[in-house]
Length: 244
Length: 320
Image 1 (cartoon, rainbow over the protein chains, first blue to last red):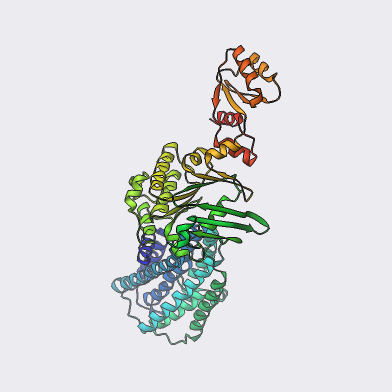
Image 2: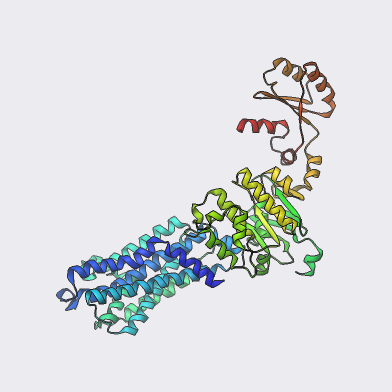
């Protein structure tokens, strides 16, 4: 049963333009633009680091955000608000199998999207390998969990597809523009950085860059924020999530 | 199958009560179907048909009562009950970006011994739509797909809520034939419908639900005999403009109702007045056509809606 559910959800994902484009193509496009303009030569802006080396870990955050904040919750709300989960309850199938399958499919999008960024970054723009590869993988996992946790919370509070779309957009766009995922924080005035400090993705990107670049700063606060996000979202979603 | 199922009704709902807040939607209703029986549930919108069915399908926990389907409790024994039951909900909803065949494969994968979905699609006239996305099908095609999905597990019983809603007459015939054939092979069928000819054609037994209670039950013929009323329904084709005839009939007074429907005169005649009416008609050289009493009449009388008879034909004339 579960392999069939997974196959079903995979085919539906392949036909779903927004998450495919914004998860797989868009981040590479952004990398192409900024990599093309600045290259990866050491830059004063980044204290001697290359633009591509700084950008790729940030765009990893972009991939995680689109899958976790948009694609995942919208898929769940789509099923629930249309009453398809109710129809499933009249079969021996478990609705949780569909939740799990959608989660897995979105994780695959993340893995492929991140791989594409790293491959294109390395082959085209001379991206340097990560300083702490295992820490990077672990932090990517933690950041992903935080984004999907927020996504699950969005799916829990949104009553219908329209509401989910509005909430997801309200969460997603500040996250991608004010956290360093697309526009470097270094370019922002102080008041904007105050907003950044309130957004979990900021901490994800900070710690992803820490692992990739071997920047000296401590990431204790970042990890605590990400862990806290996961715990709070999971607890709230457990209380608020409804199958129907 | 359990012993209980072998001895008692295959579908056995007793004293089922459903409440939405203060509103009692279903009020202590019994509904049963023996193995291989076709049972109909009719009643106006909001009479509790779908609420009752939802409980039997295991989608809603009733406020009171006991339900067994094939011996299984639909709520506590969901997995085993849903394996033997096929369900069509009143409003079928499909996930976006899935094809007809993918939906069939998915649903078939839920069951240990599914039917061949290609044959089912073929029988319900959906073979050519196999690769189409479900959300792009017409309403009638989506409705037929929901029947295919209700049958894909080779069920022993199906619950079909407004099964031919939105189907054209030809497609409706196909659905009736397919259900009849499966019923001959032992399938137990519970339906709701607003189409009385469908209920009359398919059902062994009909339950009339009104405001959450069953107000009548019986075979279609029994319901017609007992509840369609005694008035004879006569149609005089081409006499709609015959003022003289109309006035003579109207002059007969109580027990004779006269209505004009376009070119036609429609009469409701109580048995006691029939002889006089026939005399008047003979004087005018007019030959009436008798409308047989139908389940529509019984339904309308039972549910207290626009007490039926020739008036229902007048409605049909107006809309057609």
